[in-house]
Length: 445
Image: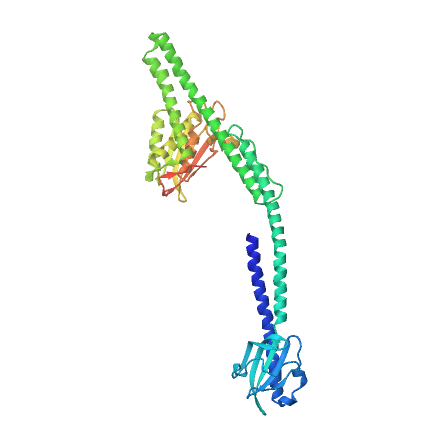
């Protein structure tokens, strides 16, 4: 139907333009003959006009010279003596495109001009036959009407075949997607060999399935790791309680303070960490935008560490103020200090200073260090490089992951480098201005 409408409009426009063009050609030819006859009358009387000016051809069908009394004083051989249009229809000047009758020619388009000559005033009338134009236009219209069904049939067949070919690829993709389930996300949709929008869609869907599979795998791994971490303190608490039930004399303050409470606190800290990470994944971390003196915040955490460790903790803190969430930034510093303290041999070094519009905090330890190949991986969840860097001190493998989430929510960056003299150094860079106007900032990395 669309092709039919387009062909109808285009055909009608073509016929109209052709008809007007052919009529314009007739009018031009008649006007040129009028000019020639008028020029001849300036030197000759009507009776002495050159016969070539009165001859008829294609498209000129009639030539008449009419005097002021309305008599035809000179005409083409086959044209009747009556004027083909009323002489009064031609005023001073020239008129083109008048309709008239010239027997035996029939309908003609007349060009006329009133001419002042040495022998008097005359009206020159020249008629051009329009039947040939009408016949040609009718032929074109008939040919267009006859060819339209063929064009429509070819267009319909081509459209059907192309759409069916495209939809067959879509159906194959739909069938494959219908077969993919949550338990088997490694399937991919077939990609057509031809390079078109359908193949681009298939590639995009496969990339989406890859992301879904990666997210699903990470979720399963996260659940398994969380279950594993919760099992250990829970098993310890259950075992202690079972011993207390079987031997009530052992359920005393020492068991509660040395076994039950530490394991309960460990489990509570793990649950809090998991809850924070879950909120970061779902909605992003909700941050406050307060003025924070990072040097004062770090000094408080360093002082707390010094009270609870025998390590040599050294701090070089320059005044550094930024806009951020004080509680979240305190947790970043605390996690990094705890991580450094667990791995240090005997020294932890902390520096804070503003540099080039950023707050830069560096926390280093003189421990075994972190291999360059693992420095990005340690910020993943539940990642432990070895027993020495993970289990000693009760780490769960979530501290650096939480650091990375909070720093990313503040639009900052965190990286691990080598400490001069051996060991590892964690460098945190935070913008001094507010990270965003919203109170909830996505922490996707």
